Image 1 (tube, one colour):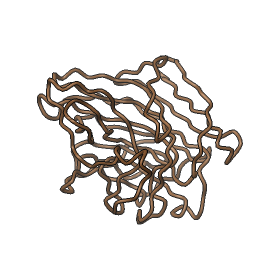
Image 2 (cartoon, helix red, strand yellow):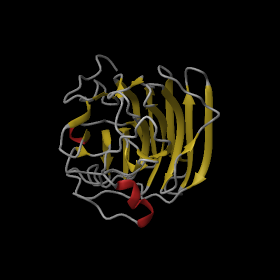
Image 3 (cartoon, one colour):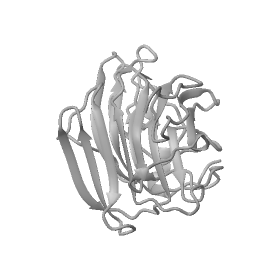
Length: 271
């Protein structure tokens, strides 16, 4: 299933795998709403997605989650590769079969990229679709850092949002409040292959090898998320081959593991 999207985000939805060469200058990496290829599969997201219809007409006013920034290494020698870990509201599947998706998305998370020469880089960011992502320069991150992200409205449905990203390891915190018109229709906890704009073209950046991504303490509307296996999203390439796969939820259904270049992923041994 392909959705019709506003012109402002159409470019970001091209499901073309971009493989920048060693000499290709990467100008920008940005994030985007879900590109669905049917229930539980996507060309750009891996993780968990809750939707308003799937949740009995629930609207989402807050989302949160914690993770350890994964280590990124080249999957293919000589190729620049890109990944993002984030939580957000909007942009996902509204119903369980993913026949309808949402075009709004407010999100924040971390970036884990690797250059064609094998040099890894890490950063934190926030984004209001369809605008491009903004790097959070005041909160540096590196592989192994514990990160907490919370996005929510103090007054439900006010469309005035506070984004908080904390590097728990370093103690540095970024907080901002911003207006954003959201449908409040979905909430998600995601590992993504972002869109990359460079001299070799524009498309979905190839995924690096990542250490197992563990997302935990997932909340929606300030209560534990209660994740279900039916809400999983597997990242697949244009031929349907798995690129990243989430595990079943952990024992208290507020977290999961996500494994790159794997058809299956073991659930966390403890919550």
